Image (cartoon, rainbow, N blue to C red; front, side, top):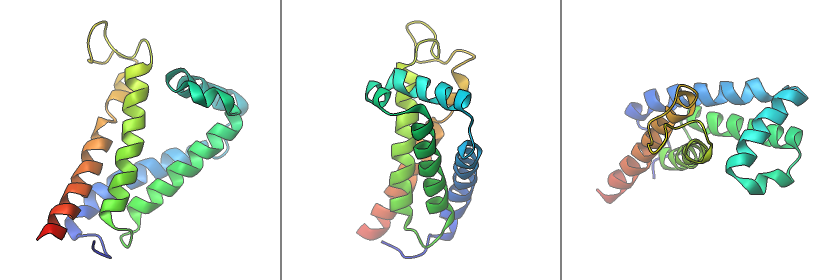
Length: 141
């Protein structure tokens, strides 16, 4: 594992890191209505989240996004580790997309207009897997 991100890892790490960090930052002072909406959508896809208070859930989500965004932006964090976090986060969003009614066209994985915003997050999984694979291939050589 490298101790500094490869220069060619920086563009996807910066692009995704800034995006995710900003998303987390925007949730830091979320009001109760926003927290309830975020929590409701997440709990609809992942029922175990119903046990968590919406405000607490939103704070945890914000903290996770800030941490992941920072991990992607700090080049001393190994790309494989940052990629693992990005892949897990993206997979959670894809699960949300697949499990939430109305985000997909009937009988299809194609998004509805409402689903485009989450379906496009599949790129997070692709970037994360690319970072992991490159680190693994680099280590193998």
